[in-house]
Length: 151
Length: 431
Image (cartoon, rainbow over all chains, first blue to last red; front, side, top):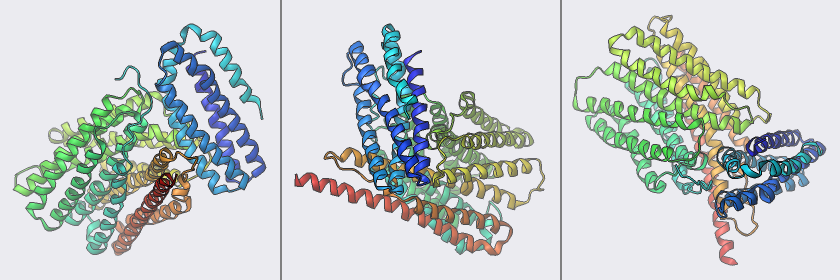
């Protein structure tokens, strides 16, 4: 499986988890919201780390582009992590409005980020890392597989 | 196309470049509401009344063109990765020129002053053409390949055609040229509302509808075919207008069918959304799509001569096109764009572990909801006033209220943005 397909599929998985967490919080079902939010954050973190620890370094080694697109994606991961922190803080306070506000902001940030990755970066990864696709994809898959079943 | 795009899309324009358009546009709607109160029932009886033309242009130039231009200044760099040349400079020219041009044209319609027409043409045509060119250049230089891209390019080409035709009409009226005014106006209106505004809305929908509600993507064939098919149909309609008016009428009905197709695809995608959260933007978008279906149905029946040339039908179609489709969609979009871009700018300024206010802290959902209800009321009163003229003044009041509320909501975003920005700067100085 190409990196594009693999990572795109996991984006969809993160979207599903996001929607479930948001739906629970909007009903003020805080137990469910805690659970779904934890599931979402786990999926998101696994995704970020598969990129930051496996795919991006491999891409940077293969192309020599250290300060290029991967750096920008790392910065956006940081922005999204701040919003996730805001969501969790609101969850602790059981503050529905603040949770949904941070969630909505994260949603747009996340979708813009995904589109950039899916349309530009992943095709670049597929080309640059074609030689190591089999071994690297297995590692990435293993990292992401955990978040599919961990509830 | 850049070989190694760095994905930073860092050329997001300064906050004030798009925001100034959003802050002034609603007040043109307020003026339109006041004008309707003053003009009374006459303004909603036929599309050719001077007050009607003034009302329409307060919306299409003052409200729609301004917000669409501002939104493109933000959307093209941030979402499409096309960097607009000197955005602040472009905003400094386009914003006042478009605003003054709109006012000059409205003044000309109401007083028939030749100078008003000439000033409007000289301000609006070069501005429209130059703005379209600057954005087109950015759109041809992006590395991103999305279904939105061709819609935006074709829409901007249609904006240039609209500006050219509009300027021809205005110069003709100002200088007393003999022109086929009725036909030219029809062509001008179909390129403006169809080729420019609708194709732009469609292209932006390809991007934002899946994004806001986590719906499936628009079918790839639909996204590829729609902008071309719709634009080609308009070319045929224009070409046939003089040679075969009856054919032109039917070709226009095909354009309306295509538009209805877009509305139905959008409603279907929204029904399959994974994000169940119903927010104001979602309801604004639904209103726009249902209005588009009503408009298409009315337009097709009119093309089949069901209404025997009743002049009120054209007014009804205009109300649903402008207020029902575009004002709804634009208000819904503004409620995402203005808070999100303000958050993005604040987020970049924050360096000391500070948390900028999130979108809903910049503008509460309840404020948007209440303004949405005012919008629905205005739409209902406008539609009713066409058939019960006694309601015209009430419709004008509702329109002014709706737009003032939108303006107040956007001012709220701007005030909170500035307050937090100053707070960040102050704490940076104190360190």
